[in-house]
Amino acid sequence: MIKKITCLLLATLISACASNTPTKNGASQWDFDHRVQFKQTALEDGKHHLQVIAKQDTEFSKLATFLMRQSLRICQSYGFKIEVLAGVERFDDKLSFPNMIMPSLSANIECPQ
Image (cartoon, rainbow, N blue to C red; front, side):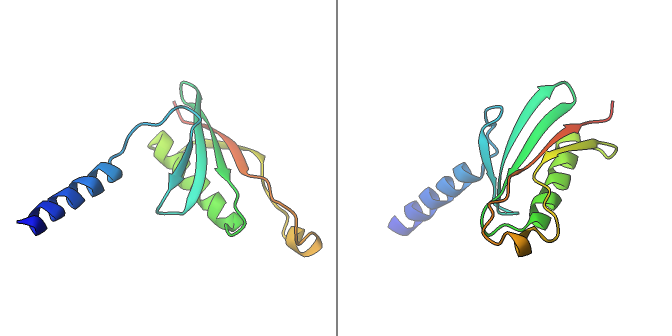
């Protein structure tokens, strides 16, 4: 009986944690699948600002891939436009500045009408 109650309680807690609760506009969020932290802000109808936060162990390619995937998720179709505002690194940045802190990848996304 105690095992059943424990299993039921554990299942309830897991389902509560996995629910897709809406977050505040611009609040910091975490994507567990891609292991990146990001902030998403709705600017106006069909336009959003997305900031993928750079961490020490997160490669630029992962940030850029997440930016593309999240843009598709936001717009729910292809044809979106991405205006990159900051965070693109050069290929030799880590060689010439090994301890440089890279900025977060920041972009505006415009969905097709």
